[in-house]
Length: 269
Image (tube, rainbow, N blue to C red; front, side, top):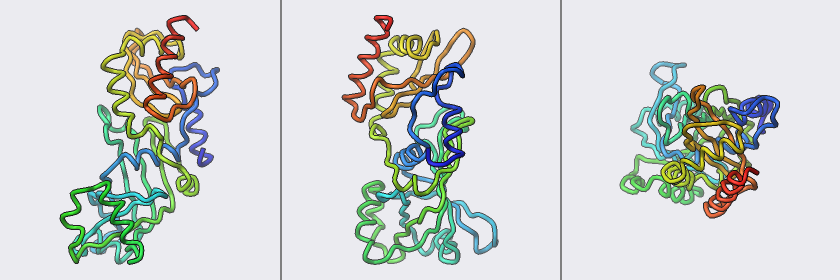
């Protein structure tokens, strides 16, 4: 785990629904989850320090690009108040929330990156332009306006919240080295498929691998190491984290390992 606080939180909350005497179910680190979330996001909330009201934060809706180290890239106009704020003081933070969050937003994942946002040197603008337009194609209509410039946030600290009771600071060195989960871009499709076509299999997996008898089960997240289920049981709603039999980094591998796990569950193994 990326820091002592995040490590203890992850161990405490891994595998909800599993008794405390069971070993924790493997999960991605907080740094990996933070990088995955900011990779999936496209728009965040940028907070700068107000020039008009010194010391007060000024919030803005902010589309962003992302470089290989997970540093946010902004395309902003000199006419915008947040740009003027950054010119006076580069300190800022960017809040990114789970794109597909439904139900209670406080139960969804979010990440806050804190750092200094400064204009990108001319020699690096071409790369930043490419990265930004890959994520926010509509910007092609104003990217070359004279009053627009690319800014990049040099990340100094990261705070990750995975839901209720799952939170912690992430060391920036761990964040820099982490990579988005390899299933990040395919996860929504995997979840939709499993919940639409394999509800009975999910109930079976909950019984066999988490020891929970459920009337209904829905997959809520999936990553290279496993998945989370939301379960309807006679005792109310429960959650469970279930590990894959082995790491799966492609949709095809994920499908194969899920089929194996269902077969194993049906055989009572």
